[in-house]
Length: 438
Image (cartoon, rainbow, N blue to C red; front, side, top):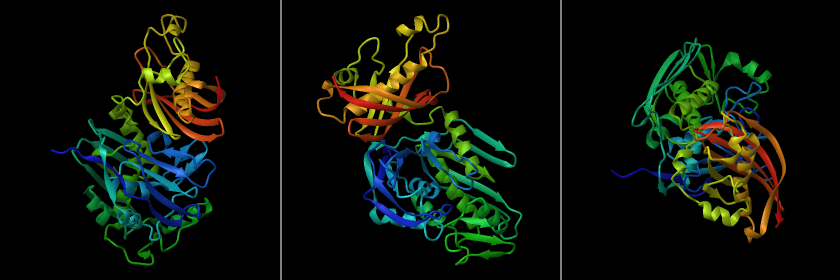
């Protein structure tokens, strides 16, 4: 049996629209990306064109930003990403750079994902020379919050089952279940439109939301009446759209999912909470374990680039390097590390400052790869901001650092770094560095 391969778009696929909540017009372009690079958003309207990876750590609604899914990296934000993410997942696209020219992904003209599907199918998709790296649900995972329930159970396909319950005679209780394939998504899920109950509209407007909402890009349900420029597309269009949203939110796992997800009355916030719990339960939230067998630079190549030597060389392998974009590196932490003898006797913990140093060294490999004759250069620290440490690092741990190049101007750069152990975030920081002559 052939192994499924990763896919990306065959060329740039673009569509225009207005942000449903911000009301800001923008263009979204899905561009091809290399194998194993995953999905990333790029804010083309901001200086330096910063990017945000699609993973559980980047997801988070704050300050009452409900009814949409938000991605953040430092000060960079993209709102309402669920429809484009659902489309990429539904069409089986693993790797893509999603360029947007505003703070919010534009809402397609009819409020469904069908225009996004049409834009992508107009350029086509291509198979890549790398196997698909699934996240399989290996043990049941259950999430409950009041009347809201989500569960994930093992399955050899991706199946989504959803039940909604509204105190409205038009919507009422609806249930639907689909095995997600590109054909099913394009014909049964993508056409389902965004909807809102009429009694919620005023409150949403007072909260500064739905500034771009119209009866053309959303269905409004009022008592026994549907307010829209066209009739319902399906008798159960409401629950189908909830499946669309759920599929988009599940994309935050960072990899295609195999399993059966059952949801009752869930929305974006609880979907995201469930994604985090599901990722942690499988022990593989960010997919880095699939990189562990790869060697982009081994220790000998690292020594040719970096000036550090024992006991201050704190990176053992570079797993992935995207020039001028991103680097993933590894540090094996053993009891033989010299700092453990004094930090602390009988309770060895890696000093936080050395975690940051190791992170910076991984970033230094990325930075020195932007210059000619890297062996003639050094990287100096200039600043550390927003450093946070989530849990201790101990002997036997394997630290995986993921750094993104935020800005590179002349010889000065800014990087956002995160460190993980066994799939858990242990440290993060924004690093400012400068390239100097040795």
